[in-house]
Image (cartoon, rainbow, N blue to C red; front, side, top):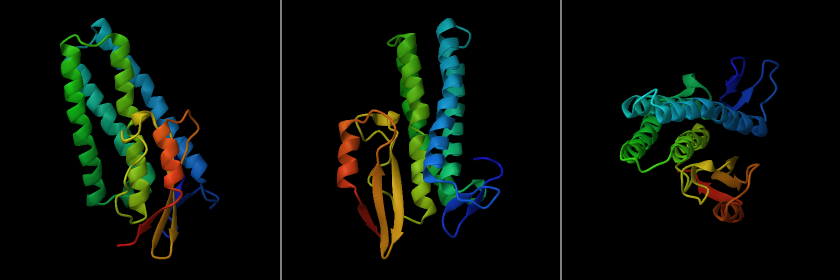
Length: 207
């Protein structure tokens, strides 16, 4: 997040240097822009692998680092900054990364067997970075003290999988939270459209 932003834990929102709240729209834009910028690195790694500049082991280690960076930065953005992270938050990111590393190992095995073209490798590599959207969304709900939601944009539960650009809009109400699945600025899959209709809102009771 921009260095001059501060987190107001009373209302679970960022303020700019003038004290003005950062809008949800701007925060989602930053969520997506960061991941889009990381794609240049991932694309370069795929190209280097295809041309033989790096081997599969080097590619795997570099991809692990890029995935870790994406998930950590997205979670920090969602939770309110590194200073707001607890042991539970680090554990949440660690669990997400463990899953992604397992998928990555399987991916690397397919590459080593020659089952994928350079274009396929690049496309699938990008999906690992896109999937970090879920890290931001998990952090946003965690910052409000909420239990786990049934799904998160980018977690692979929708047809668009990691390419999901939707987001949760969460409003604290008496006895819990009203949660709205909001469609992003992108072509929407049928699952996301359905989510936006049935979770409009999803009421989550305070435990």
